[in-house]
Length: 108
Image 1 (cartoon, rainbow, N blue to C red):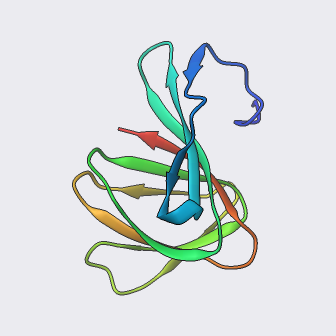
Image 2: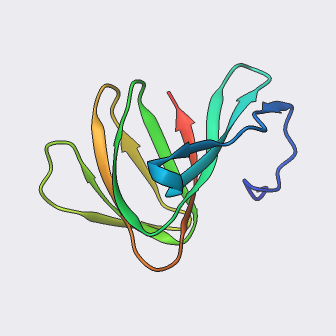
């Protein structure tokens, strides 16, 4: 299996960064040849709330985070290689402590 970071794909990559929360989250959008959309980014130590339009799958590449989905009271920890699903038209809180959390977001 190819490393998701170094895999060669036919894709268009947005060279302009998406910068959120005063630079605490920075990502780049990717559109694959089949129209699939993803983003690759990093979240620096912070506690942030993201809103979703479409469903998302967050895939950890490096670092770790704790996540609390909308309506939940408990935080769940995810690290490199872990994935979590976020429903569309929802939100989630994400907490990063220490090392930055690197991710790939797969949009549904």
